[in-house]
Amino acid sequence: MSAALTLAKPEHLDKITTLAAAFHAEEGIEMPDEARRAGLAPLLNGIPHGAAYLIGPPRAPIGYIVVCFGWSVEFGGLDAIIDELFIRPGVRGRGIATETLMSLPRALAGAGLRAIHLEVDSGNEAAVKLYKRAGFVTRDRYMFMSKTL
Image (cartoon, rainbow, N blue to C red; front, side):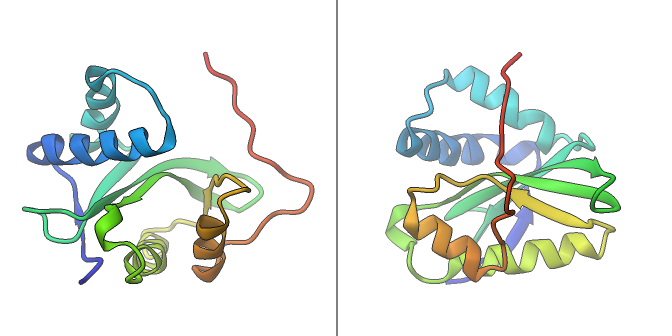
């Protein structure tokens, strides 16, 4: 099975919303489907702040990844955060997430991206191992913090 990536477009909204609902249920993220769709739709409509990709065949995707763009003085330019990454449970363990995490940053670097970041539950050993295998490192003295507005 391949981690072929397809830039998600408006016609993929139903598919990616279904995948996101599965991810959110798995992670205990509670939100109405309308809010989920409202968070995804602008990414599929081409806003410059981020992008969503379907993983696997677009007609029957096996996962998705969302990246959101920003700017970093420290990293010298355009950076991104992997906001969500989900692979259907039935196809996990086949290297699909690793392949995605290796290929997407390389492709984005070609477009000028200088760094890519992500947040992970430090207790999720499988995810930490996956991200380390894909070249992500923990930054000493730093932790990701949030404030909801």
